[in-house]
Every structure is written in C-alpha cells, then in structure tokens.
Image (cartoon, rainbow, N blue to C red; front, side, top):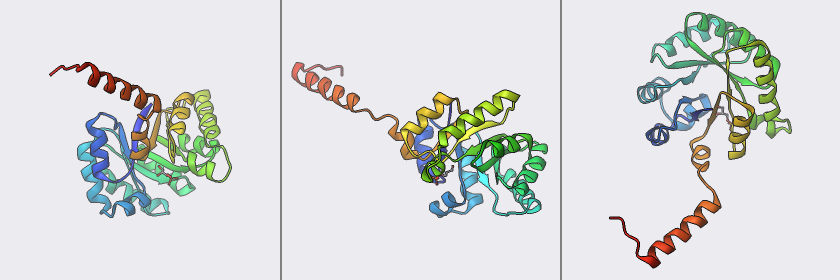
Length: 217
Ligand code: G3P
C-alpha cells in the first residue's frame, strides 16, 4: 500500500520524505488554509521535493472553470494530480482532464456508486473519506471493501486512495482490504511505529547494556 501524506505543511512532508515514507501527497483547501500558504507556491515546493503524485484541488464548482483551474495546476509540475469533487461537474472535468493525460483525483466520495462513476470518468484516484463516514455512524471501511469489490469485478484501474484516515487501525484495515493508497496526516503515519512492548523491550536492553557495560564504539 502506498503512503501519501495528507498535509500542506512542507516541513512535515520533508521529515517523512527523508525516511522514504512519502509515495505522494494530498492537499485540499482546508489543509492549504491551515498551512497559511499560497496554493501555487506551496504546491510547487512540494512537487520539487516529492516524486510521486501531489494532489491539488480546484476551487470552482462548474466544470468549465474546474477544467481551466486544473490545467493551471497541471502546469506546476508533471506529478500534479488534479483534485475535483464528486459532482456531475467534477466528473465532467475529470473526463476532460484525464483525457488530456493528467492524473485526476476525485474526492469527497461516500458511496461505491460514486466511485463507479469516477472510474468510468477516467479517474486516476478515488478518495473515499473513511473518518467522515465513521463520524456519522456509517462504516467507512465497509465502503473501501465495496469499492474494492466493484473495481475488481470489472478491472477498473482507478486506484482506491483511502482518505480521512484518523487512526493506526484505519491504516491496518485499509491495508488488509487492499486499498491501493492511504493518505494520512503526518502524526498518524508517525504513530504507526509506537508499540508498548517495543518501549518495554528497549528499556530492558538499555538496562542490560548499562549493567554489563556493553560498548561498540
Ligand atoms: O484527505 C482528506 C482528508 O484531508 C480529510 O480528512 O480528517 O478532515 O476528514 P478529515
């Protein structure tokens, strides 16, 4: 499963990138607002660092303006994935922009039928929002399972990009189901390393190193 980082905070991306943990980046208007940066400037900076797809979202709601914005975003770098919302206009924009050879990420997906439409419109990525489904008592992981089944039934190549990931359990469950990509905030990715038995075991080893005066250098 590919790891995308869900943030527009450049330093946080750079830290994970150094460890080889960044297969791509996703941003959205809320993340751009949080970073307090100009969208074109920060997206360019991220694209210069990361080789994989960097999603940048359009701001318009009508297809024609989405297409114009998408073309402008695509000029930033070759690895831009133009993000459009899952509306009829977004699907129209997806069809045109993907037809021109751009990567397109269709976002705000909350049903397998929506995901089916996005695949038929030529989406490179579909972004189902797990956490926001869970927030209202629906089952975000069941949605990922359903999309996996539907795509596999018909051989769609659109990649399932599990988004709105809030916990380490979401990450593992997505990997079990076979999501192609998961995008998570840097803090969630960093917390994947945590395990109390690792901490406990290391504490014992350190105590024994001290007691036996074990030295390598
Ligand atoms: O990738 C989508 C993500 O940014 C949404 O996450 O936590 O705002 O639902 P969240």
